[in-house]
Length: 118
Image 1: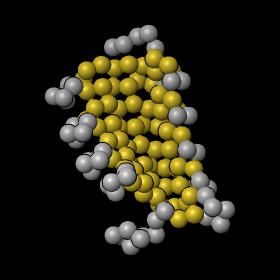
Image 2 (image 1 turned 90 degrees about the vertical axis):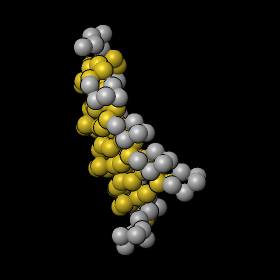
Image 3 (image 1 turned 30 degrees about the horizontal axis):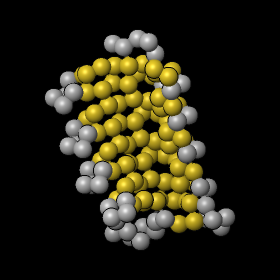
């Protein structure tokens, strides 16, 4: 159990991951946290840098990245925001400079960069 007294890292009767899971780097620091259903990542997940600050957050559907994902620099500053469909970039990805201004906006279709960058 973790510090909030919830059962974590459980397997179902078929030996598949189920419920809340926490995955760790080899040094024991938290790498990611999210839900599994029938052995597949589902719903909201958070991924962390070794120093403990958040690296990315977004959702999985049937073990594939889906919907909006937000990525952060190791400093904690926003780095990029974009959407995924079936584990592939899909839609506009916005990257930010360290000062918070927009660096670029790049469209993707089914994981492939479009030839147009704003």
